[in-house]
Image (tube, rainbow, N blue to C red; front, side, top):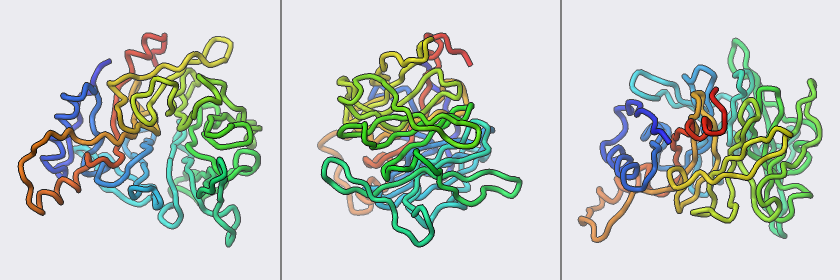
Length: 333
């Protein structure tokens, strides 16, 4: 697996952040890099990177440590990395997360707890006898004036109150994870086919260990040749890991492949997404900077500095290259 050439960091990224990133990359066996440290990846929870077709704008989620507050932000490519971080024009009022820009860049899907009708209640879900805050899939369309007003997907997709992680193929088919009547005790991945004027009934993907495990956070290849997801197929290194599954000639899905210790760690990995370059993927990870004891004694300022480091155990965005793996399965573009 090839490592990406390093992009220049923003001058706002503290030297300690870059040093920690280098140590982690060198000492933990990962070929990845922390994405835009100090700008996008910071001391809070950052997840779900998605890019415009030209790669010049990234949308992502930022939230608190328990994800009770999440907002969709954007950052623009600048000469030395990324900057100009802003709240997305359609976000900042409700609990929004998990943005996904369509392959043609004309539509951005996201997840929100906003009510289906103005003045209504936010969705609430029940799973295994417990009640959880819910969410549905919404989208905004792009025009010359920018992103339009949020629209909730009607019909069967959002019939249930716990629907997450939208990802769309070039033909319009919508992939997502949800807790539905046929998911047993967890989450499964579904595909709702695009009919030309809406979405057909969601079809549960038969992958891996099926209902015996959770399958979440799909990232679909625009041509539907492979799918990345988060879960545990029995060989996970942590709470959840990233897997890839390739589509067979008969349209069934093959055996999930664990992406190994180069991408996964003993900490949580989830929310994989595809970049705009071939083989480029982004993964959310809680991996911290390596720590050895005893450490040099820190004063209060030193402690505060380490707690504000992106690698403080919060969720961050990491960038990896799986082009060799794709080549090995006959995928070259």
